[in-house]
Image 1 (cartoon, helix red, strand yellow):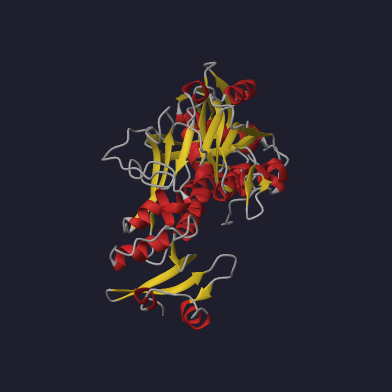
Image 2 (tube, one colour):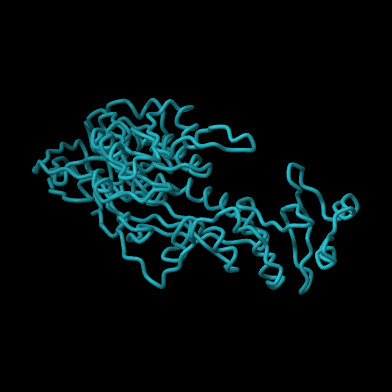
Length: 444
């Protein structure tokens, strides 16, 4: 018996129109039995003969998917006809496109005619998810792939910092989306020379040659942005670390509810500094929250949450990197699931807490705190705003420290305008500074 394997796109045979079945014999029945087995082993709910390199107008179907049962059956030389003009977007995958899921528009109700494996005429009416499966498999018989049916979702991306770039890049490179606008804050003075510079998101948009809208500080009501968004008629709006609270008039513009990505398990740590807050609190895990936006600060219903472990050595930079990596992996699929109706927004549950935006002076170390609190503080403030203390009128950043029993030991420091230096070298090289003896005892 010939063994078949699923062809993976872009295999050329997937583009060929299958031939009519002229005879239903024992050999064909054996092939159909193999198709059912391969479909089940691959955890699929449908499989067409061309996906196995067989140019015959046959597909099999059946199984459970997202609580919608697909009846088992085989269709030979089928024809399909929509019996309703109604269409709906749903999430589809394909065994010939491993790992890819896309929002596809299909008829919601169809009639199918054809034959079964015993050469008997059959017809059936399918509705909902089974109708989607049949249309998907019938397309394979025509040499049509589900990617051909894709109408990319028009999405607006709104954010400013570096970590948003990685997430936006994952969306930009996904075939389900067309980025119609990137929104970021206006250019600001940065660095020691206070040179006017664009935000990382603005730089990314310019590099990718994407339409870019920079929100002016003077536009308090965001009226110019609102006008621009209305002209685009977007399907989705995704916010990731944008400093302005959006009015309801903007949130209502996209076809689907506007979404915000937040780096905490809401309602915990609403606000601009959730990563630092989680480390300061000594939490062993935090997470990401994808929420449906309302006109208040991080109060909207939750679409999806996922936990992320906090390592004892994590500072705010390394933890942000973990959260960003997880978000980049998940978000394109989550947006597809949301549009396809597989994710439903639920109200936030539990007690809310807040993590307000940090200022530079928030990094000042209070040496009256316990060694455990100080070690967390140093990690939480790295890299921004930076934990610091003052020695003889000189501001010194404490970049890294660790605990030895109940004692805090400083590992790495930095003087203004200098490179980071090990604590042991600091003691040798800066003896001229009038250092508090209590601080000297903390230097390794």
